[in-house]
Length: 396
Image 1 (cartoon, rainbow, N blue to C red):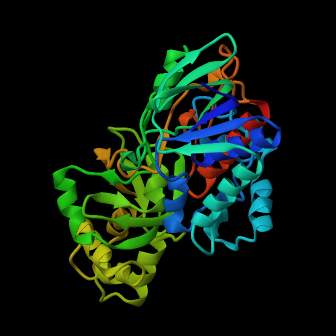
Image 2: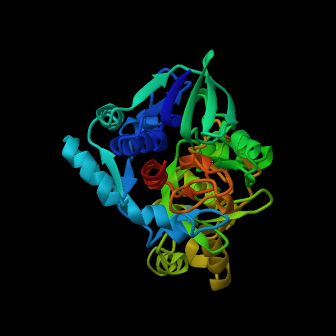
Image 3: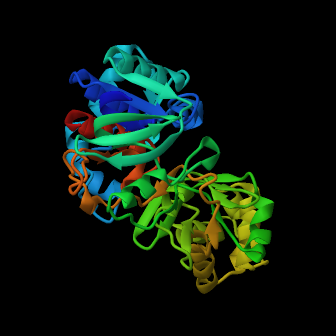
C-alpha cells in the first residue's frame, strides 16, 4: 500500500493544475488517469492550438458568463486565479500566443506546449503521475481515503476529483465524478450536453440541407440571451460558435431566433433598394449582403416573386422580419459525442467556494467540469479549470 498526502483523479486541465499547486506546498501528490496520455482534451482543443483562456473570464463578468444553479459560486476561485496569472505562466514558459475575437487566447503553435508546461510543472513540484491506470473503489477512512488503482490500494489524506463530465466519450469521458459525489452524499444537478450543435426534424432539415457548408455572421437568440458570432449550416442542422453558445441556454421545445443582418436595419436596407434598384428581386438584394444560397432560400421563404419596386411597405416589413428574426425550433443536439462540455454536475451547495472541498466530507474536493459550473465558449471553461484546480491545490 502506497501513501500520499493528495490523490488527484484525472490528469486534465483542472487535475494537473491542482497537482502543481499541492506539490509546490510540499504535499506528496499522485495524479492518476485512465488515459495513456495526460491532457488529451487540452491537446485537441482550439483546433489543436488550445484556446487556453479568455481575458474576460474574470470574477467581474463571471456571474453572466458562467452558467450554474448558483452563478455566484465560481466568482471566488476566479478572483484568486485570474486569466493574467495563467498568461504569466505561458509567457514564462516562452509559449507564443495571440488574441483572437472576443478575448480568446490561442497558442501560435501546437496545444501540446500547454500540456508539456503543465506536466513539467507537476514533476518540478515533486508530484507523481500514473497514466493508463483504472480507478476502482474509493472508500473513506479515519485518516483520509483508500483508492483502488489498478490491482492495488493507495491511500491519501485528501482526494481531488477532476475526472470531468460526460462530453466527448470517445476520449473516455464518463459520469465517474457524479457517481462518486453521490456515494459520499453530495447532490448532482441535471446534466446535459453544452456548447454543442443543434439538430432538427426531417422536414426542417430538408429546408436547411441545401445550405450545408454555408457560414455567415449572425445574432442567435434564446429569450433575452443572444450571441453575435459565426453561424454554420450543416447536413445535420446548425453549428458554429453562435449556435454552440446558445445551446447552453436552449431547452427542448423552445425555438431560437436568428438575425441574419446583425446590427443592420433590414427594413431600411429593403426600402433603400426599392427606391434605388426597383427592378431587382428581394433575393438579389439580399445576395449582396449574404451568401448566395442563403439569400435564395430567404427569397423562397419570403415568397414575393415580383420586383422589389412593386412591393408595399407591409410586404417589405414582413420580409425584413424574416431576415432579422428567423424562427427555428431544434428538436435536439448532437449530444455528448460532439459537446465541448457538460452543463450541470456536482451541486455547488455542497462545496466550499473558496477551497472546492465538500462541506460534509473533509478532504474530498471536486474541480473543473465535474462541478455545476459551465463557461461560455472561447477559453472560459479552461479558466474555470485553472482557477478551481488552483483553489483545491492550495487547500488539499
